[in-house]
View 1 (cartoon, rainbow, N blue to C red):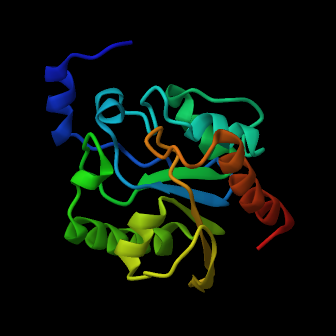
View 2 (view 1 turned 180 degrees about the vertical axis):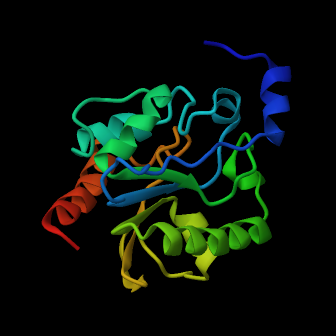
Length: 186
C-alpha cells in the first residue's frame, strides 16, 4: 500500500491506541514501548507499520510469537501476554523530530502506565529515547538495574530500518535474551 504525502502529513495529528490485554487475556508479561508512532503507523492505526520496520520479523525470530504477525494483527499480542505502547503519542516521520521535553514527559506517562498494568518486563525499543526520558546517560542495551515496583526494564535496539547498525539477526538475539528470561520467570 502506498500513501500520499497529504495523507502522511495529516497523520501527524493522530495517535495510536496502546495494545494491552483485556479481561480474558493472560497477564501482561512484556510491554514493548516504541519511541513514537511513525506517519505510516498513524495513517494505519497499527504499531510498527512502516514497510522496512523490523519489529514484527524480530518479534517472531526471537520466539515471542508463533508466526510473524502483520501490523494489522497487533491485537493478537494481548492473547500472548504482550502489549505495545509508545513513549510519545505524537506521530512524526523520524524520532529525532521529538523534543527532549516530549520524551521526558513520555517517560513520566510510561511510569504511570506501567504502575497501572504491572507487566513483568517493560521493553523500551530505543536506547537514546530511554536515556533521555529517564536521565540514564550511561544506559546500554540490555536489562537495566532495579525495577519499577516489580516491573523490570530492558532496553532493546530500535527496529526502525534507519537503525542500520543492528541487523535483524542481532536484534532477534537481543529480543531473544529478554524472551528467555521472561520464560524462566522474573
